[in-house]
Every structure is written in structure tokens, then in C-alpha cells.
Length: 457
Image (cartoon, rainbow, N blue to C red; front, top):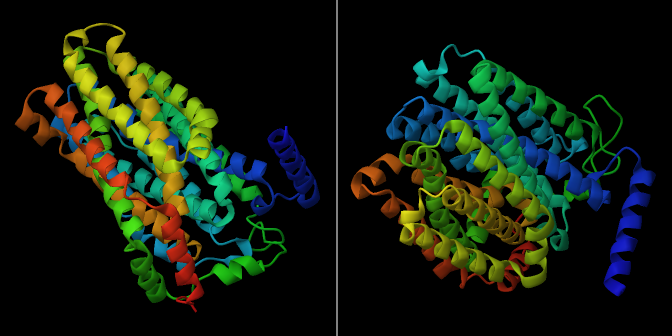
């Protein structure tokens, strides 16, 4: 009863704060934070559904080779690996009267709209793969750009006790955005052409763009540069005015034992994730005999289900049982699942077996990502939040790009698909071995010591 009453009181406080501020300050309301970050993560998932899933499946359906598909996925994965070059700039430079990260979010959203519209201008994309890859690169660049800003803002203004729940909603919204994009883009491409699919997604992202355009990070800040308002004291205190100091302190905090182990673990597990991203469309279409529409429908259903479960269950499980424990459980289940798909390969032709595997894999993957994101956020030093969190994600995306990029070589070397699938199992085992050495409480004490030592002027 006490917990229920606490939740009711928090809800009432949120409603009162919304009424009080009226103009919407994210720092004042958990409801507004959940809604905004969920929407922005959905906006990230929409272009990813096109680039990482719909286009590779379309390429496979049109007879493109695993090497060509691998090259496309590898190219679009590059910007996600180099987010670390963007994050320090965001931590160092901003227009504080509009917030520490909000100006960057607006720029990223605008870039997404323009890059999607630019992609729609490509004539005969499958026979102009260099242009298609270039367009995919810029779509990924602005998606990664926005991702850095959104994550930095989340670390700055979401309390630690809300981070698991927020990550559940965020990651769930992203998977739903990916699924929505995958299904609609596949249908539009097959019935009307690539041009209309890109324009459609640009319009959807433009609609989501309105949300950060109308909200403030903190009370009293400007909505637009010409509006009334000023920087809040909290933002001024957190702001770092030296790139040199950002990198100096990033090195100090990242090379703390727990932080370093987290980075290595994220890299290895994402090698397997990237491999699986590029493997599934090729495996299901060219080995099992699916069409690209069949693949997109199964992936969409699996992603929507995983997203909804992640939103309402994934974050709650991490809150209740703990981040490290749940990461370990998810990794064990993923290892068992991928070994089972190999052991029972004689069921691959069964109409329910591979769709069932995709469903359970996507659900466990989503839950694992929620736990990873929440843990990484907790390990961050807020003064350099965007840079440190982005470093974790960049390391992960570097692993993801490597896994996707070497599909052709791995398939050529191992020949049989079951051995390729087992590469994922190996990456999950490595992360599981590392996770047991992650000690968040000890790490946070060390971060507080860094803060108390005034390493940042």
C-alpha cells in the first residue's frame, strides 16, 4: 500500500508540475521525460528500420550478394562507431539559454529529415549502390548525432532511480519505430518504389521534430534563440569549458576498472549483434526461402512485441532484480537460444521454428540492451555525460559494425550457417564472463572522489 501510495503521490506531483510550468520543462516532470525520450528514440528507430533491415532485405530479395549487403551495412554502421568525435563537442559547446543538449537534438532531427529527403532523390538505387551507401551513411550520421544528444540529456536530467524505467520505454519505443519503418518501407518499396518510402519516413520524423521544438530542458530557458529566457544555474554549474579537460577527465573515469570492463564487454557482445543483424535477412531469404515481405513482417511482429515487453516489463525487471543480475540472466538465455537453433537445425523448415527463434532473440536482445543502457548511464560522470556514455555506445557500435562487416568472410570460412550462428554464442559468453567483474557501487564512489577533487574547474 505504501509503494502504491508513493506512486500515486509521484503521479499527482507530475501533474501539478506540468500545470505549474505549463510551457513544459523536462527537469520538472517524469511523465514529460518518459514521453519525450520515448518519442525521440522512436525517431531514431524509424531510419534504422529502413537502413539496417528494409534495404538489406530488399537487396537480398533482388539477388544482391552477401558481400554487397555486408558492404552496405558496414558503411551505415560507421557513423555509429564515431559518435565519440561528436560527443565532446556537445559537452563543450552549446547555447545554454536553450539547454545543454536540446539545441543539438533539434539539429540532429533536422538533419534526419533532410538526409531522408535527399535519399529519395536517388535514381534506381540498386544499380547505384555507391549513392545508396552515401545516403545511408548520412541518415546514420544524423541518427547517431541525435542519439548522442538525447542520451546526454537523459543522463543530465533523469534521476538514477528512473533510469531503468526510462531506458525500458526508450528502447521499447525504438524497437517499435524500427518495426513500423521496416513493415511500411518494405510495403511501399515493393508497391511504389524507394523514393516514396524515404519521403514517407521524412514526414514522420518531421512530425516528431515538433516535440523537442516545443519543450524546455529546465524552467525559464528559451524555446527559440529569439524567445525570452535564460540559462539555469544547474546547467551553468555542469558546463565544461575546455575540450582538453573533457578528454583528460574522460580518460580518468573510463579507465576506472568497472568502466573499462563495461566497455570491453559491450564491444564483444555487439560483434555478435552486428553479425546477427546482417545474417538474418540473408539467412531467411536465401537459405530458408522467405521473401523480403515475409522477413519484414516476422521482424516487425517480433520487434513490436519485444518493444512493448521492454517498455512495460524490461525496465521493471532491472529495477526489481538489479542491472548486473538481469544482464547475466539475459546473456545465459541468449546463449541457450542460439545453441538450440543449431542443435535443432532439422526444424529450420518448420513454419514456426525460425519465426519463434526471431521472436525470442529480439525479446532477449531488447531486454539486454535496456540493462546495458541503464548500467552505462549509471557509470557516467554527469559533467561529461554525453562523452562518456557515447564512448560506451561507440565501442559497442564499432563491434556491431565489425560483426556486420565480416559476415561474408565468416560465411566463406565457416561455410555452414549453423557455425556462423555460433559466433554470436561466443560473443555472448565473453560478455557473460566479464559482467561478473562490474561493481557499480564501488565505481560511483570513485566518481564522487573525482568530483570532490575538483578535476574540472
